[in-house]
Length: 284
Image (cartoon, rainbow, N blue to C red; front, side, top):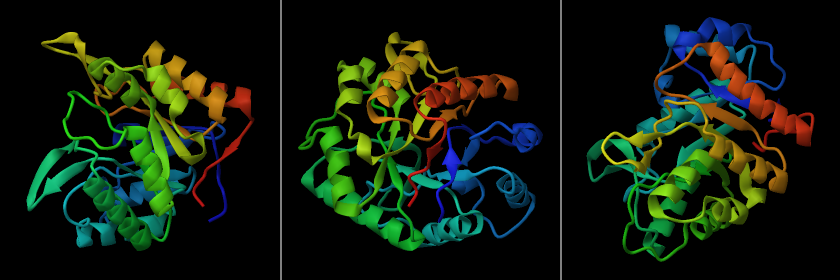
């Protein structure tokens, strides 16, 4: 695939279809969850085709369950591959998490102990996914709400080893870093500074909210609020160090008017423009 010039993008929502289709901002791209479009036809897929005719698209999966004790579901992987062949996404990404285990399916992205065995499982599942898709994918750092016992690997080292073993890239979610740092008590800036920049294919920015019971003692990666000033500051320091990368504004709940999301997108775009007029997606 030829590189596509991207700067900042938005998560694509049906409520914003007409405005998204008409928007002509330079460098604009959109990201969708492929699970919502992995069908043979119908209006939803036709809508996605229309957007694809004007804007680059990326696929951000939420259900491959790469950290589970079994390979990704073969039927789902085949549907994902068919969708990728159809829309030719500039980026494909998934989470470092699990959501299916021994026949049980849970509607969440769950953590796991970063053991040597887990490293082998995740690397194998990434390799299976990349083989099925015929393309490189990016793996996203998770958000954390409690400390797990049994880690043999630091998270950044674990992610970097996955890139070494599989050739995958990384998706750095800056909001996840901020939320996890506050919840677990480590330095978000130190994490950002240590993250392997050469492997970053995409960056995510999103909003978070305090837990309704615990308040600021527990932040929730809710994607239902504007990007926080602290997250913008971490983002600026990141791109100052590693250079610009395709950057997505994520908003999945409490959707504001499209114009408000576009304003956040334009803020990220302006920051990226300050480093380089246009950037090329690292999808090859």
